[in-house]
Image (cartoon, rainbow, N blue to C red; front, top):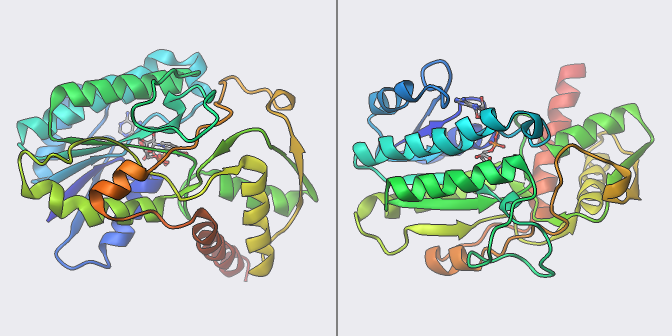
Length: 300
Ligand SMILES: NC(=O)C1=CN([C@@H]2O[C@H](COP(=O)(O)OP(=O)(O)OC[C@H]3O[C@@H](n4cnc5c(N)ncnc54)[C@H](O)[C@@H]3O)[C@@H](O)[C@H]2O)C=CC1
């Protein structure tokens, strides 16, 4: 099976490449700029068609949450119109699509984890653009799986865990918001889950499983406790450590508002596909060990 993934350097794209190497008969081809540019609709179908995929994973996105507040056109061009064009290309090539969306489609006012039936109400331009992308994908093809995830981290690219480890090298004390809760989701675990279900998605043209799902790391935590866990894992692996000081979101103003609770229930995905994402703690520890090893090998 050949899987075409949009975005060459993205965390999830690189996770899919890495995890596919462990599976026989599975090839992941990443496509990105300049060959596939989500803001250049004419590039999209030809670039995907050249891969002759059995499945498309739409992972590329405008992910600069704060910057999107001052660049709404750019965010919508990529996350809404670009995502729709990728789904149209998948429909044209008669292959299914897995499209990745976000917990930031919710406003965070629900006291419990969000289910697929809960009404989205994005607080940010990024969240609104991703929500518009979900609609565009669903309109383009019935053979879609829209996976909303949250708080993605990995050994690759830019992410919260890497930022916290970098700050711990520079400071003894790091202030982290303690009133935002979510599910840390490893891009490696997400990649495994997508690869696990890919055969089922390509098997049937009318699988009842197509639709909208939440898929995030198991367990809910605050940003501050997420940071503490990553730093404890780093210290255990011989890496940097710092004290984490709880602050309120109001004490760390950002251009984009973020939901206080963006935790997602993955129960529908788990029941439909018979598998669950690992507990977030162990996945954070595995990622941190890799990061600490790479810091050590760079400095030795
Ligand atoms: N990073 C996070 O915490 C979360 C991410 N998501 C979603 O998960 C998916 C994967 O996220 P990550 O791997 O973390 O993203 P990432 O930011 O690591 O990578 C995004 C990729 O999209 C590419 N891209 C951006 N604009 C493009 C354009 N015009 N044409 C072609 N490629 C373009 C970038 O070059 C990059 O390779 C995205 O859809 C994102 O919205 C959802 C929830 C949380």
